[in-house]
Image (cartoon, rainbow, N blue to C red; front, side):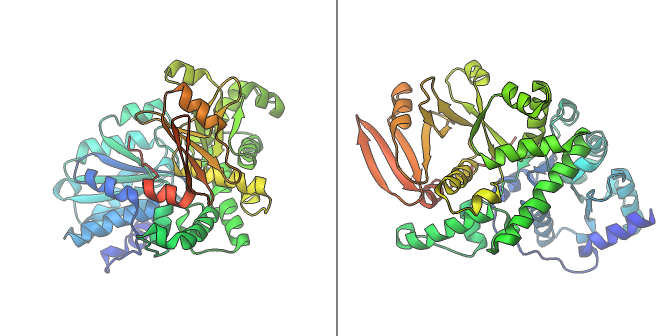
Amino acid sequence: MTQIKEILVESNKWWKTSFTIDYKEREEYKQISKFIPLPQIIALTGLRRVGKTTLMFKILQDHIKKGFDSKNILYFSFDEFRETDIKEILNEYENIMEKKPENEKILLLLDEIQKLENWEEKLKRIYDTYSKNIKIIISGSESLFIKKKSKETLAGRIFEFKIEPLSFQEFLIFREKNFQNIKLYEKELSNLFNEYIVTQGFPELVNIKEKVIIKKYIKESIVEKIIYQDIPKLYKIKDVSILEAILNIIMEEPGQIIELSNLGAELQISRQTLSNYMHYLEESFLIRKLYNYSRNRRKVERKLKKYYPTIISPNLLFKEDNYSKSKAFEGVIVNQLNAEYFWRDPYKNEVDVVMADQKPEPIEIKYGKIETKGLLKFMEKFNVNKGYIVSLDQERKLEIGGKKIMIVPAYKFLLQRNTKVRKTK
């Protein structure tokens, strides 16, 4: 218990002194703030290094600013202490502060909780015992609700928010660039968008331009830690090299339509094993699966699926050939749009992204030459009158057979849409 006491005192500096953080506005925080007054647990999930802990500290700071007693705020990270029980932490807090949770209003922040064995049962007990007095905020570097059991255990007790890498708009905020008149600053915004592509929305890379640093950061701080530490410990994987091979295939060729039986044979593993590994990568936020759009949900599930990495390979980012640049550009836009659907018909007419919140909205992504064939085929089939082509720097309007196609530079398209629709579960 002595070690826990030392960690608590070291981690909770606001118990002794004033506390401030260098916080830049995040789109998710506006949503999260609405749910904080409710008794339910707030869960922040997402890729490593996207700013989950910073958002936890922002919640902490706001509580103190509103007059909440800083000594009633308890933070603990399970990153290196996965054997420590939540009840032990609360008991040691009681000993240090001489405060009992049943008599106090307490803000409890638990970071990297997925590393705690059977965390959902332990959290449920704390919530059911102290929910009137303790507000619980948790974070996890992968989806906390992969297992059906987790959802059932905490049903009705938790709200999950996925924290994404920075959107382009957030990137501009972090760079302290405020261009209210987009038309006036087109050249500056175009240059900044190229810088944004290289950072991939990781807050710690916002002001970094050195290729060697970016490559090392992406490889060692994110990808390798997830592949070699997070996933094997969560799923008890024996052969990490196959997991890495699958990820490399998707990272080096974003937007592949993958047939599991064929890829499984190539990797000399069963279709089911490959399916499991793909699921692990998806739930750890390393890959994104797009379904082939159809108005019939059953057809959507049966059709081939397309896969993108959520992190663009530095091999593509820093190559000078148009193919690599085009693939990197496509991957970034797909991730920015939080895309769930593409479209491809039996004749290989294709649309890169279909946004389908209400009526279908087709979006083509073109780094270079503008082509409209796939877009027009989709618009005809689904009776859609307006479509988009996201380009690197071209802008114009086309009208073909009564169908309107808006060609828009990526930076303008993303800013005008205020994109990155953040999904709340």
